[in-house]
Image (tube, rainbow over all chains, first blue to last red; front, side):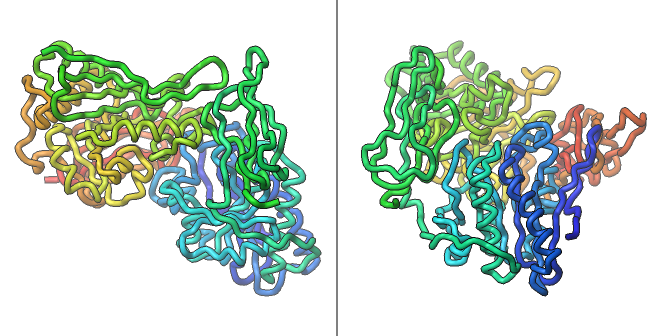
Length: 310
Length: 321
């Protein structure tokens, strides 16, 4: 294992922030795995840390195949993680809205440019990312429909679903989108939680990455068989939103199989405990996403149901 | 003729505990409605306050001279009220997100996405929408009008009548991707960004300048018949950034505390000092930052902590001669 400093952000009264990459094997740049780009992506950091630990043992046992190399970057925003801010605090900017970056630009643009420049020659790019709402997903692989995506390869993670999503205008500045435009096979892995560690989801995500690395002939190690993945799109997802606001008491969690009309959650008046709304599923299927904050505002999506899947 | 003043909620979301997040619009229109509609939006970033003073100035003048109003002026004084309350640029109802990268929104999305949808629906069909910003923290700007190159052909003439100190045409679409103005332009409603910061000794000065520009534009639209300043006769009288080469971005390379010279709005010569980055621990000046070329300083960082890459100033290079 080699430790590379991919980029250094000098600081004034704090220590410099070094973005570390852990490199395994020698030869072609086969696969890069990137963890936290936001200061609250603790689960993403944790999965990467576990992966570094695992690959260290694989390398020691000669399991990195000749001519292949893997890079793991657990976090690009350690300073924000240390002080509990989601965004890069000095600029209040989201690094994952700054790609492909600008090496002469602002600090976040420079971080994005350095990451993009150092990692874009890898063949496969795996980003462990978080959703823009607090909540839990069924672990899945996600890629944007740029015309360059390859969902079949995404199936090699062995997760139940490969989600090909139509990009929105703000996606053009994300890492995944720009990796794909640069010719990489880019995947986003949703690893359950964000700001806390979910051991089960972390384990599933870690196994998926190990499965992919074995399947692509990059490492040789023991790995568990995965699912026969199903490729889904936006059209397969039905959103259940809150019609009222209050405390959210969930009855069903991500991964639950639900029948049409089944109760999913109660929205409770936070002052007197009365039930303001009972959320029910409009379709039989699997709960793909569940909002997990204690409060819910009117209109907010609470569940995503994968219709027809069980 | 009397002016009808009407305050309306254009979007409202119930929050968990006994509160609504409501976006309010104040409409000024002559009896019978008149002709033409101008929308003025502010506070899409919760930490930008300049628009408040500007729309206050617009409203005061309309009510002082109601006989001159011949069309509709819709004022949206604070789009991101939750951000304002905590001094936050982003919209804080969920994870922190930039409201101005979330348009056109959707009625069945998050609270913020629903609000973005309602804002767009309410503004669609206006003759012009002005979205007032106040730069970012610790940065001063001249009074600028900004637009995408895609929209420049139709929007430049609007910009001239607003009498800005500078026009900036962004070459790439990504800069304004999913913003309010780009969304409206794509949907056929002309929209412009106005930048003017409040971090001056007297924010009234720049506010009055922008208010004058808005009334000048209202006169051009036929909405206002009262006295206003005359707009520049031609666009060539307004410094205009057409290409990236017209701007010289000056950054620092050392972390520390930046101590600026007062250069905003002035012409500097190459080599002239813009400011110094200091290290209070060592008692040293780490970096003297000088103008890399002659130019008009239209952005300037104020006294603040800086990192390598922090923007110190922007120079408009066409002023070299």
